[in-house]
Length: 274
Image (cartoon, rainbow, N blue to C red; front, side, top):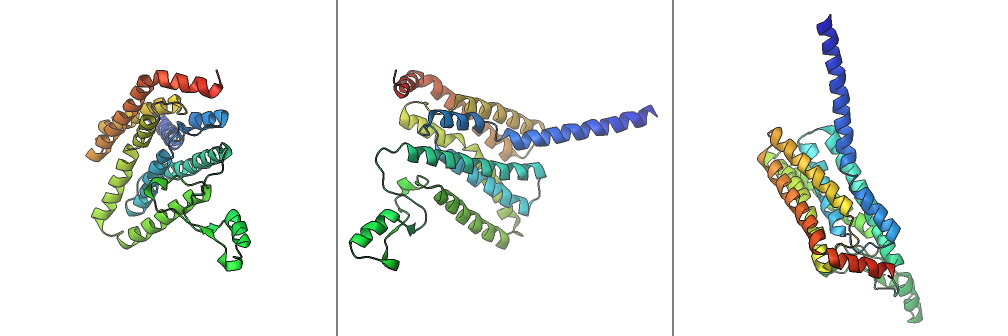
């Protein structure tokens, strides 16, 4: 009887631990962006946060979702990828809104797809252009404007194109095992490079002003835990190698916080008008 009770209790505890771990896995990836979101909302300044961080995670998690169709992994990881993509679009929407609001002089519109421009339409009317001849704004093919568009819809359209193309190729090659494994590797490696855009942004600004240090600390703690888990569970080599790379990039960002501390303080005082 004691053995039966103990066995049943162990099963119950195992379920609770499993559900807790699954919930932490889903929510844990999103948690680091909460302080960054609150910081941008409070300061109304999105210049310190690199939108390429969002691009990196959108690509990584979209690839992970496609990988699931070729090689079924744990459902919580799939849900985590979906939740993370939604979170990244929320971050992009906030940054685009804040940057538009902070524009003193209206800059040239940069968009991914063609759409009518009200200003261009008014100018067209003055020039005698009407109806279907109304000018349009087009995506600027200059690489420096990629992922630097001025409207939120462009980011959604870009990822929609990427997802549709990726889904089509995956559907055609779903039975080709090396291709499926390649998708899984690219998903892990892309996520490992998450910190690279923020490092580049900090180098460009010579400051970490506008970047949430709490976000990076939470990145680091989560990545250390994840990498240790990969090693202990003897996960495939690419998992712990990419995890170690991710931790290294997190440490580089924290080092930038220390290196640029004086510049960051000066930038913060300037923003507050001290």
